[in-house]
Amino acid sequence: MTHLLLLYHLMLADFRERTRRYSFLVLLIVNFYLGYQVFVGNFTPRVGDYRGEVNCAWTGSTIAFTSLFMLLIFGFYLVKNAIARDYQTGVGQILATSPMRTMWYLVGKSLSNFAVLAAMVAAVAASAVAMQLVGSSTGAFNLWALLAPFLFLALPPLAFVASLATLFESVRWLRGGLGNVVFFIFIMTTLPLSTELNIPLLDLSGMKLLMDSLYAAVLTQYPGAKLNFILNPEYIANLKTFHWTGIDWNLAMILPRLFWIAAAGVVTLLSAVFFNRFDPSAEKQAKESRPAAASNGGNGKAAATPTAIRIAQLEPLTVRFSFVSMIAAELRLSLTGFPKIWYLVAAGLLLAQLTAPLTVVRQYLMPAAWIWPILLWSSMGTRERRFNTGQVIFSSAYPMTRQLPAIWASGVVVALLTGGGAIIRTLAAGDMASLEALLIGALFVPTMALALGAVSGTSRLFETIYLVVWYIGPMNRMPALDYMGVTEAAVAQGMPTVYLLITILFGLLAILARRFRGASTG
Image (cartoon, rainbow, N blue to C red; front, side):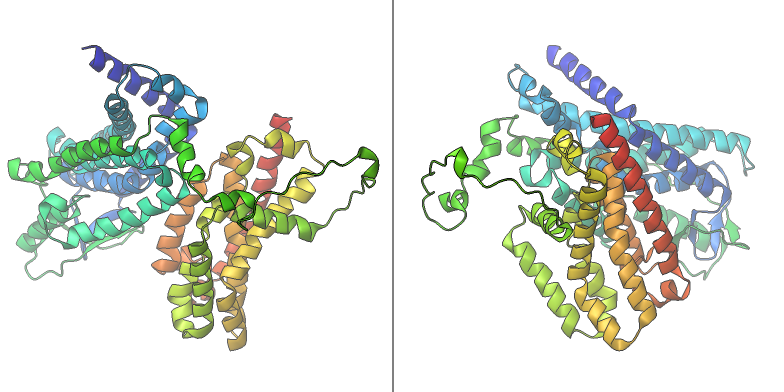
């Protein structure tokens, strides 16, 4: 009983702290907005040229599915900070000396993660009920048909995501930006794969379950209809409607969904294998295991014996400022800690850009080249908070007119270097419009990174937003989000000019956020 009470209070304290954050409120508002757009038909799943009648089953299922898709991606980044916060605040060291068992601590973190996501689902479900009661709908009000999709479609996979957040925080090399990238690749690969496998037990999002039920209803009323599941953020006029009573939530339907709750428990148990219980010696073990040569400049020689120098021998201090040297210093600082394989891959992508066909360069190599430095860009504007050096930085000479532009310029240099092959090839081809788009993209990405880093103080906000924009835009060729001009439609529609204006706005935001942070630090 004592353990359960301790677990409850641990989960409750964590839940209260995170539901009071602006990030929770912002994501909740976005989910409310998407739910409303789904209800009015501006953003809704459809089967080819058909959409369901707006009854309780259709409203609940479509809003639950849209909210789930949003939370599967962004919910992970919302809750992946519970253990990290205990590291930063020092609470972890206190908990490490307490009699609380490691497993109870990790279970509490997973449950608090799930409670945060479940609270968001409950709020969206309540808004769906209100819209169905107030708005125009078809048929009698059926509360079970409206809420069952939230219970069985949305909650089980979110429990799994909540436990994944605990696992990623327990594994040392997955705690930071690399873990954010790994999760994004995992979820964007798993979602379509779990649908194509046609194995109900592995259908994470429940999309296959929903599609099968919708397809059966459409074929019953429109024999020979073309069946393809579409989710487009646009209003389609003159769609034919079909009557659908929802998924038949019998035991055979529910049990595969409960599998993900069991999987969440297994993942939480696995977290205990990697969690070091805030042991400082374990954190230092990787650094101490490096060869001694690394501490001697990497040359394998013994450190030189220091020589006594008298004060009278020192030269007079001369202050010289070189913007190029400052950019170089920022580059060295941002590149610190990257392994040799990182440089080899970046060099390989650059060489491939210079030799591959131009169409391949634009469609595949450029997106790959500008996702590779994401962890470098995401640190821009965040190092002062991460290493607690804000008072030193903002008390130095000209932090706004020297250091801030140097950080930004170093990010632009990285963009130009990693995408240099495509820039040279496009220039040689005489395609000035695409060249303009690439150069604006080289300005847009680091400016966005600097602005979001300065506003949030963490790398997670930029990593999340940039991964989504990169995946939907250049990778899936949506012109509106194609910030590097890999699609001809984006260039033809004038998107480079739009992103130039957005870059200017991000630059102003970075200056304002930096000035505010400097004033608060001072």
